[in-house]
Length: 454
Image (cartoon, rainbow, N blue to C red; front, side, top):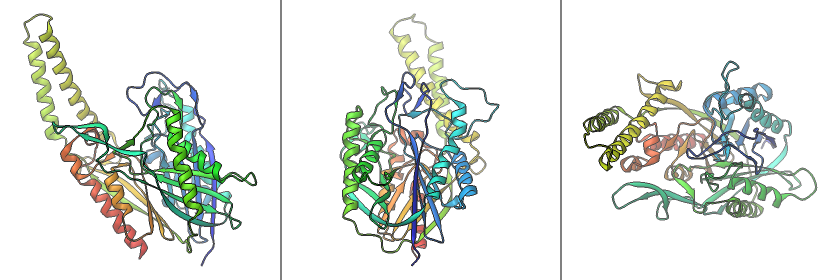
């Protein structure tokens, strides 16, 4: 059996104060400071023959071009294959605005509410966390455990009129399990922790103007504090967001609420790992799997939306009743028609401008990355997977534990279930990929896991 080595590092992202913030379209105002430090946290594992790097980055998302840039930098500096590197956003909604799909070129005109120099430096900062983790490799053993945790609640509530509303649905599916991995030195002192759970980083609402990791930050701080002995370096924790496409926190509001839930998760994960046995054999393997997903067919809906807009415009043009209530109602109808049309046109424009999209085939090209470490697997998904799909991947019989890491190495948007497409709702309306794509991803992941196990 080959010995296992592990190394971990953290690099602060240090976004400038005063930037616009991502995560809420109706947020008013610019950033007013930092409540806690946004950072890139990295873990590198080496079994003497294969290496893998896993980074958790405290931003809303990272697109494939930036992720590929980071992975190429790390590969050049460390020899870790680019296909064995996972760059996962924690999906906090209290992070600065930046172009998540491409690093700005030098000739780009400065954008309002953004700092392009900070954006250009971001890939190197994230890469440096992985490089430092690689430099700190030391003999290690692993433990893996699960603990009950119930912050997440389904957010797709069906009203009596069969319309889906973004609201708490206690009867809907959710995940009640935090998964944790610990890397320890031979003397038992911890090197790093990896935690995985699906729940949007939105305990803090749109009135928050401070940079923050939201509730996952409190979880990371708690598990590090619980493990710190005062002797030797403080362990580093990494949070991997799960299949959170239709999962929000059951309680929201302020830092007190975020702290309450985050600390509960961190303590639960720590306690579970304390009683977990070591993983006996820990060979490392990775596989990057190309995904070519069909785009939604927007043609029929665009035709209907254009016809509706033309009809409401004609009603306005034909109005002869002055400036009373009827005119207001007609204007409201036309505004709704234009809004619906605009949303569809935005989706189609995204497809036309996206380098990942083959418009002739109407396919979006991306990839998933799977890491296995002994009897544990991590499936990196390039978007916001619905929790039902995440649970299906976790239920694979091929590994004792399977982490599902969302927002990994790319962002293709929401990945709903086939049943959700029939219901509609926000996630389905804004999704770019066709119905059935989520099930294709699940089948692909489970087949790959079976092959890697064999």
